[in-house]
Length: 328
Image 1 (cartoon, rainbow, N blue to C red):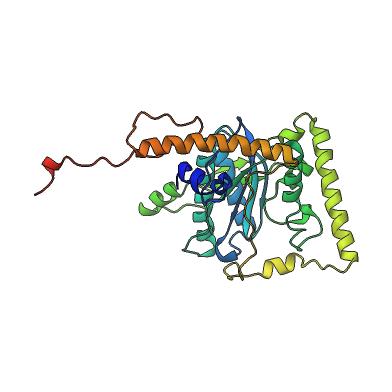
Image 2: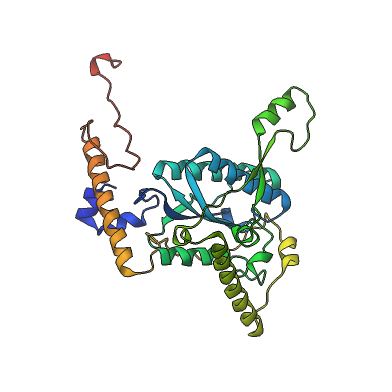
């Protein structure tokens, strides 16, 4: 589907609802919220010490390799959600591919699952203003409480950046060099679990909306949000809502296929006001129009076409063989 067809046959918003919208980073280190869910709602990220240390290790390894800033992270049993600041679309793509690909292999190894781990590609959604960013941080902190397992974000047994923010203690994990392990295994060598592992402390960068705060003020801000969530949970409990507790979580089968979950279309961006949402939509449409115009020209054989900065250009068209060299 080209941009020309969109202009002639439908409204530009259709471009934003396609399965793979264009990666558009409006400015360096713009914050994005990324969500990716397990296949068929299975609990293939079910918290445990082994799962937690691998998730932290994979994220920390990815941060060491790519120019990405990690602001917040939550690993729920059925999905992964995090907020990152990315230099450009390439860094975002490489970071996501590394994290999601390596976690798929590691979780399959732990739970004995040989199929796909993720239901579909992770979806990065830009966060275009500070108020919206604060709202998304609060949403990430509420996991575990919102799903009815615990009454405080600090009680969630899985990987959660909020615990590191409040305590000041870094999240610690391990990156396991499976290639080195495989080579040692082929050579008949015996090795321990951590002999080919690298210990990492996960580095959390301040969210742009609060980067002006001191370390103490930042922690106080997070503690205040946690207190609000705990108060909401206490009020819900008084109104009759029940929280399942960690025993119920521990008893769940990670390979159980859950009923179809309700899903709503992903928004083009997270914004707190109509004005900021409209401005981002306008910028995105200009970017998309330039991209699809260049893609159309490339299909028509104009090989020196210029794509807009910060995008992944379409591949060059197939080169037809010379008929004189074709078999008769």
